[in-house]
Length: 307
Image (tube, rainbow, N blue to C red):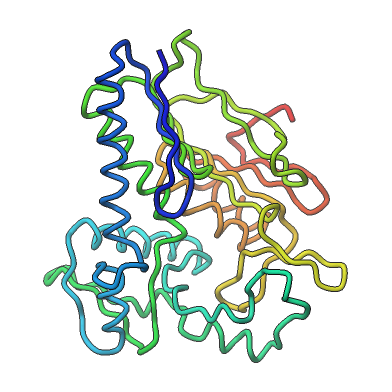
């Protein structure tokens, strides 16, 4: 039987589901997964003054901060993804001045090029200095801030899945606000079926996939954007220019690890179709589905799909 629970975690809607014949055991395991996600939220949040993230940010340009190995390793993986995506993924976006892109109805015009450049001047992952020997991190410039919004939900989903599998849960899924990770099979022995949102109508499906032991993450502009002079501007900002990207409505990443899927979806949007697919095609075990502004579908070499 499938036991499932929806709850709000990390400021987003999460759903945890697992197969079991024992209701009490199933609910206990769901509690364990929720506790693990809450633990990660306390670790990474910027909304609690004493969080590790805020300790790092509050000492930017001042001194290195010793951090738990878990966070050190997460930042190290973030740095590798930044290298891989040529800076399109960058956790130092936390210092971005959001006054220029608030994406609400009051926004009627674009910022100037100079103001946009000023807004992103502190974004540079190469100024995040990791010291392996002392297990510390140092942000080189005052005002720099890191944030895990581009990877945190996927990381939490992956950790929750791992703890459930270690506890003997043979089949289930964790849905972290659309960043979905699955393992095992449905009760009928079939893979899990997941939907890919139609970028023109976010609540409708564009297509579906049958998956198991797989994670899927989608980055799209169909939920958060502004219209200025008849043109749609996505909430996805290029960290190099300070302006929103254009040309792509949604990117879906399919791979085994939820953290990696989450981390790649947005930077592929920033990199664009040609460069983004070139990168994905070089990565073992990673697939990508892109829908452009003209509703044309682009697939990485290892994916076939019938829309």
